[in-house]
Amino acid sequence: MKRIAVLVSGGGTNLQALIDAQGRGELEGGEIACVISSRRNAYALNRAEAAGIPGIVLHRRDFPDDLVYSNALLDELRSREIDLVVLAGFLCILAGELLCAYSRRIINVHPSLIPSFCGPGQYGLRVHEAALDYGVKLTGATVHFVDGVVDGGEIILQKAVEILPGDTPETLQRRVMEEAEWKLLPKAVVMFCQDKL
Image 1 (cartoon, rainbow, N blue to C red):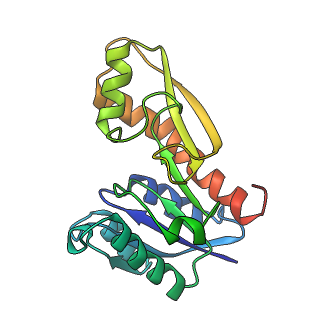
Image 2: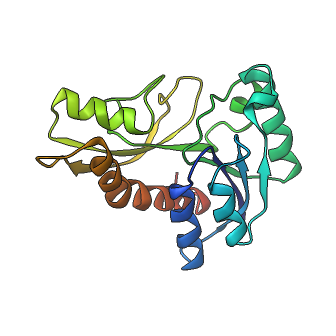
Image 3: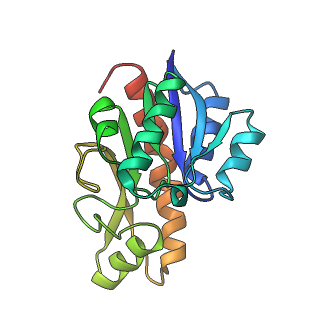
């Protein structure tokens, strides 16, 4: 059974999709061992508590830079014997030894069809605003491995979502979550846990 750590910074909707999949018995070969938040007041911690999953806060602002923060994360992951790290709305940049120690064992979900609308500064509603401003007809979500380039790691899964007339960033964000993110992320986790990646 592979031990999974889910890293969060906010509301935790993608975390909830994983918790729900686990509750339905769909995370075959894996279990969510802990949730680690970069913010003390992230609602995702409430979701973890409600599911009986240990929640840990490693507040990003308590650390001087990304490297020191990543080293603290690495210590936490090793102490809990974590096999897979899932970034689910985690708004911190990972660096240093963590990326080497967990090479091809960190996955992220991004709310666009990479390589479109990704990279530094592209997260949350900003991604959907960019897609609407550009006028594309399709967007979607991507699950990818994490490496030293923001949103640059090898793509695992993608799913397209149609942009509809009258969409706002908020309506588009919700549709991309429901139709793509919440389906792709559990699927990718299962593929990892069953050694299919």
